[in-house]
Amino acid sequence: MRRFVIIGAGVSGVYLSILLKQKFSEDQVIVIEQNQAPLKKLLATGNGRCNLSNKHMNQCYYQSDCLDVVQKIIQDFDMVKQMEKLGLYCVYQGDLLYPKSEQALSVKNIFMKRAQDAGVTFHYEQEVLKIEKSQPYIIHTSQQRLKADCVILAMGSEAGKLSGMNASRYHLLKQLGLKVIEPIPSLVQFYTKPVLKTLKGVRVKGTFSLIENEKCIHQEKGELLFTDYGVSGIAIMQLSSFYKKHHKYQLYIDFFDEMSQNQLCEYLKKLPDHDLEGVLNHKIAVYFQKYQHLPVSKLASLLKRFPLDIQGIRDAQYAQVMKGGLSLKNTNEDLEIKKYPGMYAIGEILNVAGMCGGYNLHFALASAYRVAEAIERKSYVKNS
Ligand SMILES: Cc1cc2nc3c(=O)[nH]c(=O)nc-3n(C[C@H](O)[C@H](O)[C@H](O)COP(=O)(O)OP(=O)(O)OC[C@H]3O[C@@H](n4cnc5c(N)ncnc54)[C@H](O)[C@@H]3O)c2cc1C
Image 1 (cartoon, helix red, strand yellow):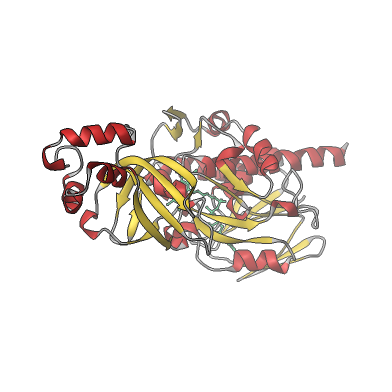
Image 2 (cartoon, protein in one colour):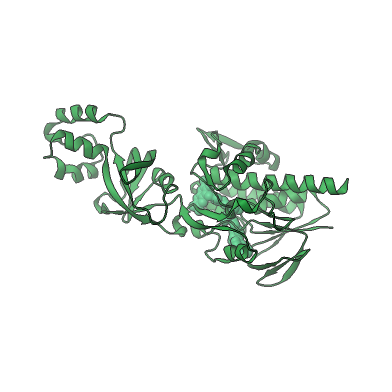
């Protein structure tokens, strides 16, 4: 009997535990989790609705140091089909895939039921502190030591504060001498200067550009929310994935992305006193009253390229993911650590960060699937 030890009861770890136990019912599958309960982060995903995947699945929606490997993993995984096998019915709403129930809770319940049915063992409130590089591996937790023939690193990230903010996940990797790309928050809000406090709570639909040295780094069409520290909203979260530490950025807001600057000029000319009350949110119109005296071309250009200085990004606890983590250069295409046969890594602990829209859950589950298939293939070769 072999023993598989999975570190982390996030969505990637729990899904892999089900797949392994279904494939190798005679073997022991243990999941070690530092929290009191599994899948805490999953419950918060998609505002409690769990956006599992996206119709447009491609490496261009990810950042990683090995995008070729990411592409193979994401394209080989059919989320709808694999979730159906667990008893979870998923439907597309536009491009986004959700469980039919629109509840992350039903995803959690299905995963835990299937894990229980299969006979997976869970050890909660145990933090893994060290992995001895012996054969078998010896896992040191805050409460016990246990041997493992195969170890899977599924420790996720501190994003969202739901998987613990402690640094043990990265210490473990460093102890093993593995290359770690410094993790920074991504899919997160911006601090701005000035902070437009009078606009707090106002949502704007438009096009938003991340600018560095007058150059557009990335542009997003969507929604922005003004807050009492800066700006939030899906479009801003997407832009944040292009943010790099120690760089200076500006955000340009295009309030009228449906018109060219010339068209906007012509339109403004027709407005009595250039009064924006009838064309923008009331609070924004009031804010722009101070610019009403400007020549129409200047006012139009301000409305098309309204600048805010970006002062930084918010902390990991407000982020949806961390960019960085275990470099894919440490692993082969099956996510097995090259230095340590029988040790694998899956999910967000890896240096793979997707955009908003179901890309991160897709990778978490697809990487678990890839590893389960790889272990099965390896076992078949050994036994034949
Ligand atoms: C608010 C929010 C909303 C999101 N919404 C979406 C969405 O709608 N769609 C989408 O695709 N993605 C979304 N994401 C991102 C997505 O949830 C994550 O990328 C994904 O859940 C990562 O899964 P994981 O299993 O790799 O890691 P995690 O979910 O982070 O799980 C890792 C687990 O490992 C445990 N652990 C860590 N270190 C140790 C240790 N040393 N010992 C023992 N246990 C340890 C942690 O406690 C945790 O339970 C969202 C994230 C957040 C925060």
